Image (cartoon, rainbow, N blue to C red; front, side):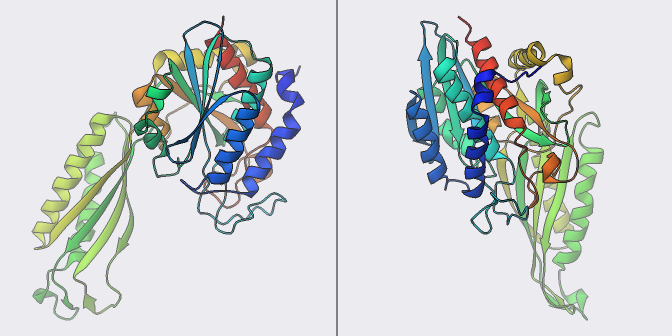
Length: 393
């Protein structure tokens, strides 16, 4: 039996064509001018009240029916990544160095299809706010929309978002209450010493040696300071120093990513990293400057909204339609800024398993990735069922 809503199945080809169009014309963070225009025009044509410019290129479409005062928000991200596509697909990116390598083209097409069906045949009583967000990929478009007054202009009783996830069976939904995705902070460190000739290291204060000890010592924070029952990641992803084998440089630059699931551990990591770096640098007669950049907080799903969202999937697809015992993810997501202001749930839909784009298993942020079109009608149907259940008359 086809579980897809007939009205969604009827527009499936249009949904796929729209997704392919967006995929072929990717736009980076805060550059989603054409995408946001397309979204706004579609929403307006279906009778939504459209607000543009929130968060720069963000779009919010609102549809209200009946007398009930409840309101729900659904969010989709629109931005692409600075990656050169290597799929060879007929609808591959037409812009060199830009690619929808995370499936935001699919997320946008899904929410637009749900928007069309809800406007034409949706049965609900209340307000529906459809939020199309810019700049999810590292530049905090979610935070910018909140700062621009998202929930003051469009108050919501709950807000929901979904993301495709390669490596899980296509079309299965995943839910997890509480901490679901990690915070993500960036730390830029400069160790300054006193350069000199490599043949006379005693006349220098070597920042390379200091940085090597710092890198090793940083790992002790996770193993010896953070509660073993908690998650913490400290990764030194870049280190730059000098360019000659016989010259001790004046300075070393390091870049770190730091992640955790809770605000408490997040603050603990900042405190210990700062203390350790300053102390280790001093031990080697060097100085350290630390630029600690708070980026995305941990994504924490509300208990009640997550239980509600899961039950919608179970009632529709049965237990087999839900990923069992979904574990937290160490990636990050700026939907977390919205969840800090409004209760809600971030969920995933399996994009497929395997290694090729055809089966949907290729991991995101990869030149060979492609969103699995088979997910489109399933995810759009889920949004319709979630809205109608939440805003039931």
